Picture 1 (tube, rainbow over the protein chains, first blue to last red):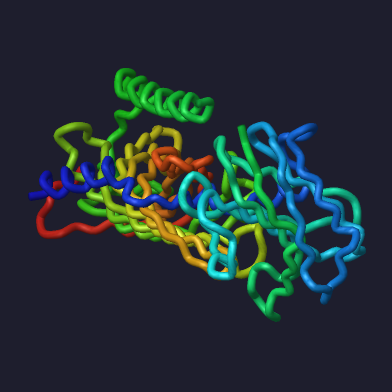
Picture 2 (cartoon, rainbow over the protein chains, first blue to last red; picture 1 turned 120 degrees about the vertical axis):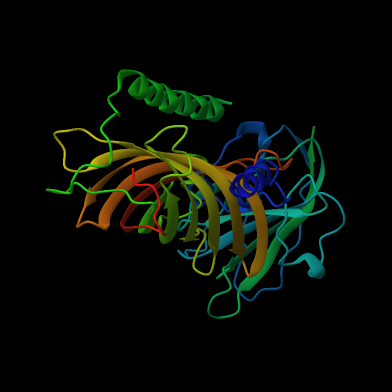
Length: 167
Length: 215
């Protein structure tokens, strides 16, 4: 009886890869998003936030480019705020809409990936979009406060959407 | 790739030390010594409650903060007596809740169920005993991120060392450090694995059911 239970436990351990959520990969990497990620040079998308003012209607733009693997999204913040956060959503298939607004999933599936970090007051921050394979992606970049959802309702403005093509 | 090499090297080192100890009889001091000055007896079972300070390591150090947790472990000292007299086997349950560095309200909750082997190494000069502890199990993870909740079940593996010394005939204090890895590479979109260094401190109660064999 004891050996049977032991065997069942060991076998269950060996075959227990039961889920499809890469939990550890889904967690945002705060340090790398705050200090600059991989990529660089031609693999950067420039997003200028100089015209952003809280309360303005959300500006929209098109980010269409052809870049290499492991692209970096780059933006400049001159709003003077020290608690502003950026959120980048990448959607492999489907479209970006209100129904997926808070959805966080992962590339290579029919879902999205989110990378965000706290911006410095002014200057430039790079956020690396990792684990993206070749293909076409929908991208949305948002600026806001309190993305964690604790306290007041998050103030989020979409500053750009577009298509990201990775060869 | 490099993580796998390091992990394999650690496992090989563990078993090399283990085999060296068995071959050279440095592990041979038995558990029947009369308790004196921190020495203690192992009875049939040991029930240990430990507090854990867990530090993320590897490529998740920028994703989660260190965390406090706890574990309860029931060890049987006789089940593997036929294999090695100093080898105990037991089941352990563990709970640790990590705060994500992404901000408040984001956290990773882990409940780990493990099957552990514990090998005691006692030296004449020391009152207590060292132990090697390792095993595997299942990790139930729940990630709460930006208001959404995701869960997964992954395998886990752990290896560690510790020191145990007696308080009285039935109670011992255990301190240990271990490395635990929760691989997620089997998921196609996964970019990294869970990797933790756990420091633990706890108390163990030795007890006997019926007229079991003393070691």
